[in-house]
Image (cartoon, rainbow, N blue to C red; front, side, top):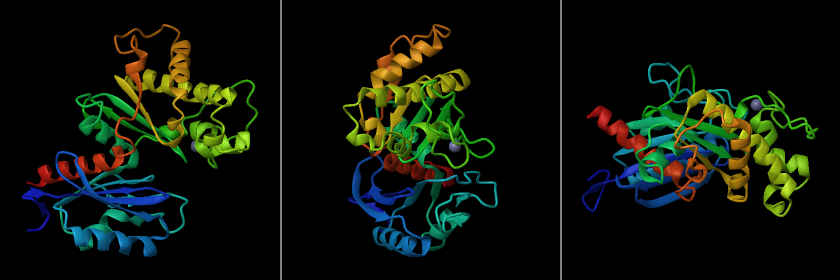
Length: 300
Ligand code: ZN
């Protein structure tokens, strides 16, 4: 039987990242049964391997959460395309359409960060919350937004990582972003840390000034998000956030910058307001499973 395992439906997940593509098969309860990782080379090299793996595993539905920018609007002609990425070969690439041609099953599609957010609110520590911001801090910085239980898209989708920042008075670093210089990603992503300090973040754990400055920027961004979106929780994931000493620094920075202007029960408990991703870097894959389940229920 197609897409079945011990009588249960098998759900496919594709977390399409700029460095690697993670394919997985799981069950509806969020158990990941098998996974397979493919380095992201050109589409011609990468896609046949991914398609072959899914054809062999025969999922009943597939959820895709992709690096971007992407077009997440089902009414648009370029729905499911990766749009303006500088990554060679992937600009204007029809990711969803290419997979649909060979795997005709219900498919859900969204940004990588919306996928991770969906994983956390469906299977993780933020289950049941409807107003959440998820930020990943790694090679790049991106953010997903859920408002009133719906993933926010709008004209395209939020690009939280490129919000413009007020630089720290003592920081002379010009910023890493080729578009904006000193946007959040330009100042606080993993590559920005490495270029500013001359070493990758994981080799700077014992340098408090590195993390004070990192918290200054992430805290500033979170304050902007609190003021614009009024989320009930902020979840932080990605490789840089494995530096757990950042969390108390960020919470302090947020409190200092808000300066008592907003008083809510959520903000009165900073440890449960600004939290680490809870799913051990599986939040993206689990979000894909939820995207697939949503696509199935939409089509049935
Ligand atoms: Zn930027």
